[in-house]
Each structure stands twice: as C-alpha cells, then as structure tokens.
Length: 110
Length: 114
Image (cartoon, rainbow over all chains, first blue to last red; front, side):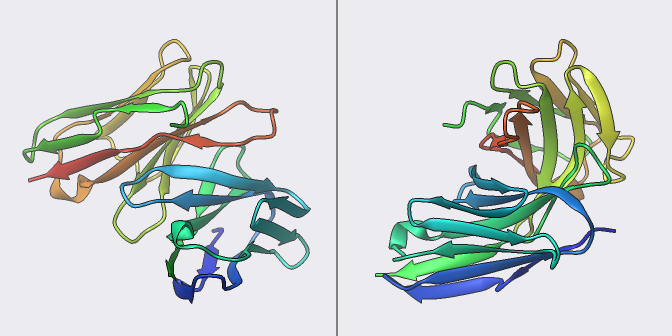
C-alpha cells in the first residue's frame, strides 16, 4: 500500500516568512502533484513533478526520486497563501489512481 | 473557475434516498476521476474513466455507488440508499493524458445525509 505522508499537518507563519511543506511516499511513482485547496473546497493544481525542481512565482517545488521525497516552498509568504496544501502521487502501479496526503493547513498572519 | 463543473454544489438528503452528482469535464479531457473527501482528510480515490471506459474502482466504491460516463464527456456518480457515512464532498477531476498531466478539479459536491 502506498502511503503519502505530509508534514507538518498545521503551520502558522508570519507574513514574509519562508515556508516549507514536506511530502514523503513509500513506493514508485510516475508523478507527484502539489495542490492548493481553499475553504469551500476548490482545489487548484500548483505543480506536477516527475523529477528535479519547478518554480512559479513565489512557489518552488522539488522532488528527490531516490529518497521518495518532495518539498513545496513558499517565499515571502502572504496571508492570501493561507490554504491547505496537498501532495498527491500518481502511483506507478496504477495508470490513474492519484493517492493523496492528508494536507498541510497553512495560516499566514499579517 | 478551472473549467470542470459539478452539480449540484450542495445536497441534503434523507437517509435511504438516492442521489446523483454530475461532472462536466474540460472539453476533450479524456481522463475523469471521482474522489471523496471528508473534513480534515485528503481526497480518497473512488474511480476513474478513460473516455467512456471505467478503468479502475476503489474498494471504497460499494455496490451502492455507481458511476458512468456514457459518451466519454460528462459523468454521473449515483449513490443509492444513502447512509450517514456517505456525507462528504465528492470531487471530480479531469486531465488530458499526455499534455503534461495537469489535473483540474471541480468545486466539489457537498453531500449531507440526515
């Protein structure tokens, strides 16, 4: 069974701080997604990674396939970044099944 | 707006009733997924379609649940004889396989069984 573990579960930061959210998984994957979910349900895809590093604005995502680990970084955090950040992996043993972590609830205080 | 539409957004139903949710994907997206999410948890996979073919079903999908995607476009998820444990948000997501695999989620359909 592939487990996706995220840490921390909850994170409170002051505006401007550098944020790191971690994701570890247990078996081979074909891709890893970082998602953002705001209150009320809407989920937005931030990144899809199969190797290396991607950057979009203040967001940076990295993945280490050998260590089965990914991180999402937010630079110069802002209160509008407050949301739940979810790591999801496309399991290599299934062509379609995305397995999700439980999410990290981020709250950025002004 | 991601382009994936779900209807209804909210549904309150009495235990034992049947409910149906609809998902309209982004046009030409060949993969469509259904997930269930309860408060404080990440989404859990229910089933997915490649065009009109249902390729995988989770063990979470009991025989009271059925999903269809008859023409490879919109999909429906029906829950028969609802139970209070079915209360959750039902999420639809779609992607165009081979296009970078960016996945797009709908806003979800909240079900409350009373």
